[in-house]
Each structure stands twice: as structure tokens, then as C-alpha cells.
Image (tube, rainbow, N blue to C red; front, side, top):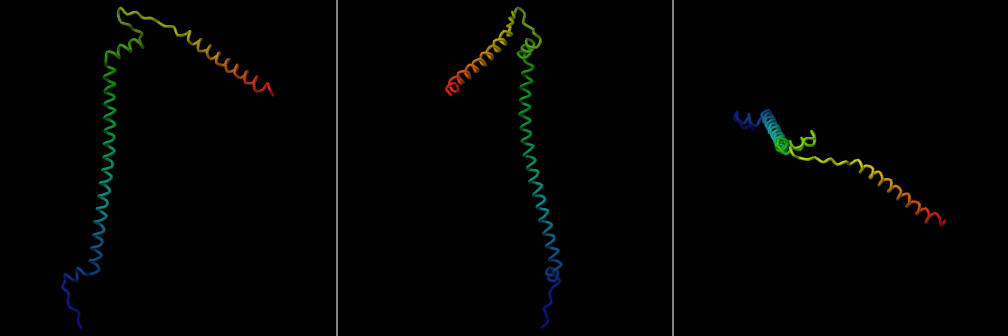
Amino acid sequence: MPLPQRSIEQRIFYSPIFVIFLLIIIALTISGLFKIFYKAQKIKTETAQLQTQVSELNANNKDLLGKKEYFASAYFIEKEARLQLNMKKAGEKVIFIDYSNEKTTNAESLKSRSQLVLNFLDWWAYFFKHGK
């Protein structure tokens, strides 16, 4: 029995070469879609990182503007003139306090503390080593 004749369209669409060609095109299309998806995710991640960086820089900028305003204020200039340049206002009296005596009292208190520790060790030795 002879095989029925197929039309040219059926022979082309059912041929193994056409099926392989079609599978290759589908594979290339899917791989291209995956590449586009990967690049979109990468761009989204970079955008989020840059947004975070922008917000940090804005906060830093705000802080620097606050410091700039403070450094330009009359209060800061007066304070620095007093501390760094030893200046005073007209009619103002300045009193100097000598802190050199406090250093000796700190040294004396350290000496008395060490004496207290030695005294404690002497009593410890007297009670616990003397009886043996």
C-alpha cells in the first residue's frame, strides 16, 4: 500500500531538521530572556545600593551644613577667641586658677592608698600566718 503523499508544508514542519532548528531557536530565546532577567536584577540591586549611598551622603551633608553654621556663629568665634587666643571682652575681668596644687594632692592620695594596702597586708599576715 502506498503512503499517502504529504503536502510540502507537512514535510517541512515534520522534518527532523526543522524540529532541531526550532528547538535551537527556543533555547536561544530562553537563554536571552534569562540574561535580560539577570541584568535587570543586577541593575535593581545596584539601584538599591546607590539609593542607600545617596541617603547616607545626604545625612552627612546635612551634618556638615550644621557644623558649618555652628562654626560661622558668633558664639563659636567668641569661644575660640577666648580659648585659643586668650582674648577677652572689653570690661571683662579674667581670673586664673592654678591647678598645680591638685597634682601634688593626687600624688599624696596615691601614696596613702598604697600605704593602706600595705597596712591591710600586714594585718592579713598577722592574723593568718602568725597563728601557724
